[in-house]
Image 1: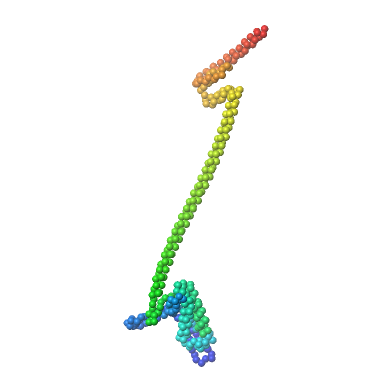
Image 2: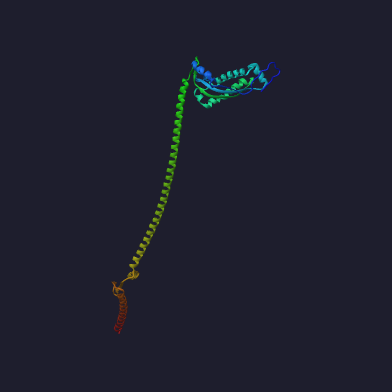
Length: 335
């Protein structure tokens, strides 16, 4: 962009495009320079970090990427020329100095351990950007972004050498910590797997317990039903026995009465007829209290039935004759 501020005496040209400043990137050198440095035994250029200290005193080198541009506000451009400089390099020099100062000021509020906490580390980005904006915006310098990248705990000696022993110990600790986290993750995975297996086994066991309880309830119901049936059967048998006993008692009482013998004879006849008898009464008389029973076949039974009928008629005739004789003798005695 091209901006002219009136009234003017001199013309200054500034690049209005976005510019990038990076710390932590190695200095770019040509291959010839690299070969020459090796021949001379000199070390290659080291990355340029922003050096600061953690709150607990450990030195730390920060890799930072910063983006900025020049504002097109005429009033701010006048201040830029008056108070900052008249070239892009003057402006970059101011931005670099201000950025280093604000980065150190903000980042040395963190403890060594907090540099490994990304939430705390990256929360400082916004604070650095705001500090630079408060410092440079009025001069027409707009801070687009501040990005914190890697960090290293190392010390730069007076001779330019770098002591990385502390960072190496930190790397060892980080390696151990990563191994620990992996092991914890593996343990958590195994625990989760075993917990799942336990829950599956517990569900199976609970299901089997419920099935067993169901079988037990069914068995109890069947047992109760069987007991009830048998109890009712026993009560029925008991009542039947009582009824039979009562009937026998009444029958005995009847047999002990005046018609007992007749009842015995009647029952004997019933039982004989029921069982298709081959027996028949052979002796029966008016003066006899005894019943004789002999086994005969069918033909004999038929013959004996005729005999019985004749005997019955003869006995009847004799009985009537005896009654007549008794009556005649009685009349004679009266005469």
